[in-house]
Length: 347
Image (cartoon, rainbow, N blue to C red):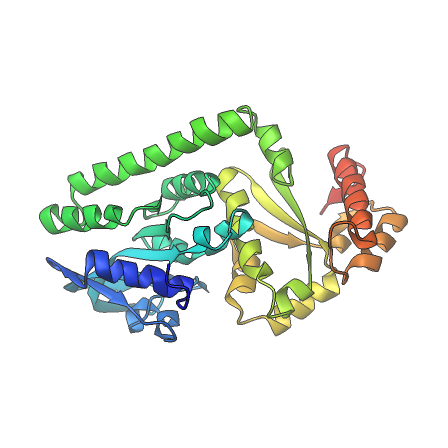
């Protein structure tokens, strides 16, 4: 690894070296490190995809067919560059990312998938293992969205897709069958290597390990998010919160999601709505269909003592061994138990 390069540039260099700028009728759009052009919508020359009500994180690269018409839903315009693949990549596995941080870029390619384009999240192999939950997130996204979502650690997958498009066309049966098999492969890896081995094939065990409460008509995903997580630029909590949201949503597509921030209050949520109105991550959290951000004030039946505990630690760093962390863990457990037995209702 070239230590002086960013994670993004390492991946971009690899894309250019292994795949080049042109293959048949397919062209590559990619920008160098330091450019902000990737944040512009694809129809305007950038690498960001989305629908009219939400733009997602920018991608690192996209492949398109020059001269073929494409109706861009965001701008309402027809452009003569039809995107067929959008890729978000990271070198995070070489940089110590073994946990939830792997989910934080999932939504970047999701915008393309929701537009009906092939979206790929590429995690360059490193000394950490890929979280297999990503496979199932992409599998479920592929079932419910217009496009296909693939997780990979091998860029030759992109080469295979480009070859199929060049040979048979972007709407061919050959490409459809190839993508369907790759999606099924992801599902089977997660099912056999993760769900059955790690969770014993039990959804309740899965939910417990993922800080999730399953109810009849919804799931409640609880976490320790607070206002500072979204206002302090030194924190990446917004990206991770969005990743966790999509993990929860795509594992329980038949239920609505109540995303409970146990250190956030309604007045602070209103403040974030005002101050972070143009922030992509907060906007996605607030506008995602069948997802609601819930705060401490949405807990009906919450004992005053537990409320006071959360007020006391709402702005405190939660570090292991500290009093604040001990209070949070104890209070969280009591609240979760009361939600499960019906003593507390999340409105």
